[in-house]
Image 1 (tube, one colour):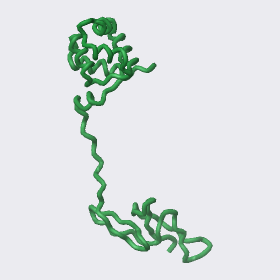
Image 2 (cartoon, rainbow, N blue to C red; image 1 turned 90 degrees about the horizontal axis):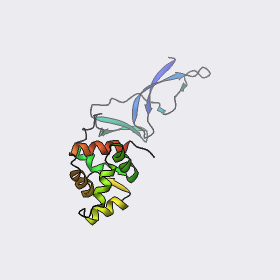
Image 3 (cartoon, helix red, strand yellow; image 1 turned 45 degrees about the vertical axis):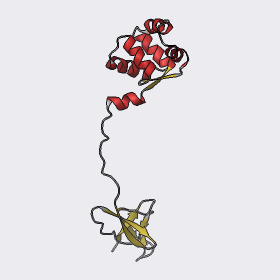
Length: 159
């Protein structure tokens, strides 16, 4: 026999597959065991379990790994809840959309709430779901989808 089957392990000691150990050309009867392998036959692993080499023997455990699945698509509400752009990105997107002058006029109007004006002047970032952004969009007559498009465009702008 010039080779034999041994067990290949991962770094944590779990069986990952069979490997071939070749007989040494210098020492008949001595086999050259590949790195990361143990000199035992592969275990009979049943569905839903996995084998781990521990202190000279196999231990069988439940295979808790989940099958590869695609993540659920993100909803528009989920996207909106995490959409954030910098002050520069927001202003640049409004400029590119031809809305910056209109927003500046709206934010300097006496009828605009003081907190909204302060947010426009001082905020370093704008969140899609913030009350200032939502009310600004409504005051400009923008549908929620239009505001989403502005945020998407803003997120692509780099200084």
